[in-house]
Image (cartoon, rainbow, N blue to C red):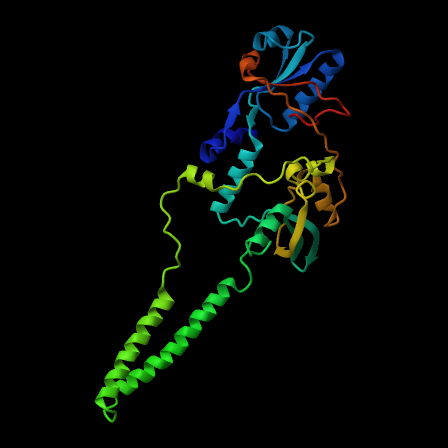
Length: 323
């Protein structure tokens, strides 16, 4: 996957920075860990890995902690903004026919014949639900029941009723047994009904035709941010499902339930992938998540390093797989 990123970025333009990375060792114990990471990377197909010794290391990065004695150098490592990357992938998937449904929590998976049936709970943030209700629209994002259908029934009724009147008027206008004055009045009335019917059935919706999209206009029309974020306490469990955008943090409200039938289920639930696996009877693994921090240098200190720098992972508390 690592080798695909430059080409993927050229196609999807999510922003990929190829800058390499260094995993530092400061003692003999950590040197052994570097050797283990080197071997693991080799087995995983990571290319151009190399352990650099202290002299070469400080030629590469002079501002490192002077206690560093060696490092594992991965020249093909790079950085992306995960949000931009995920959005780019989603947009590309939708362009290729994928239907994307957000804020769906998988609650159960069952096998029925040749198909899986995935039960999901559709939820939305409480503020969004409240806003939709104030607008008279359904909480699940669709229009209110009957809003579109009512208009269709209304127009159908007009068309049927008017057609009957028009046919009757034409018959009277053409009937030579009827007085000429009455025939003329019938023709005029029929023409009037036809014109009014056409106006009712084909009148413009009232919506203005959209011209070129101007970003500033869209921004000016945006609602101000809702809430202060002070009430949204984010726990470790919330970090698995969106952090500050998770169900708990935004006071989610269940707005519907759905069942999706499919031949295949791709388990890409991240830290919750073991829970998804258990739904189909696979309890062969358990996720032990690790949370860590990336420290970003101030712009005026960016010259101090050109690569992403990692400490040597701790066997128990460290980041985990690095290569």
